[in-house]
View 1: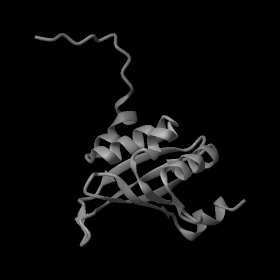
View 2 (view 1 turned 180 degrees about the horizontal axis):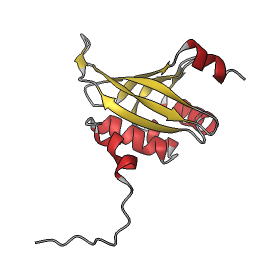
View 3 (view 1 turned 135 degrees about the vertical axis):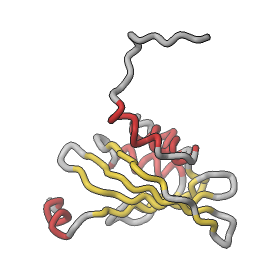
View 4 (view 1 turned 90 degrees about the vertical axis):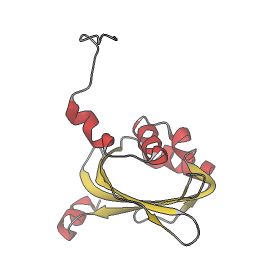
Length: 143
């Protein structure tokens, strides 16, 4: 029988519970690497020619470009994924999986939908991020 060290530092349940709802290994790896600010590991979850499509931006194509973009734009942003929706098989053999949750920046937090398209090797071929906010909330985000 294995004993548990009760003195071990364990994060409060509210800090770890949301990520537990993510079941797809690639998506879980994406969020863990992103929140650790390990943008190289984050980009490695994408196919070589994978695409990241952030809100209000042109698509970013390729692992190197995605890593460069995240290093420039994602500092201080953390994700709070809360729900992974059941995947939908696409005609091309890919699977589409939606995750909802929030992102937090040093200035604000906002609801987000991540739409992942995974190929048969479980690599991200497309990730579309969509803000889920009312028009009033979006107006507050303007610079």
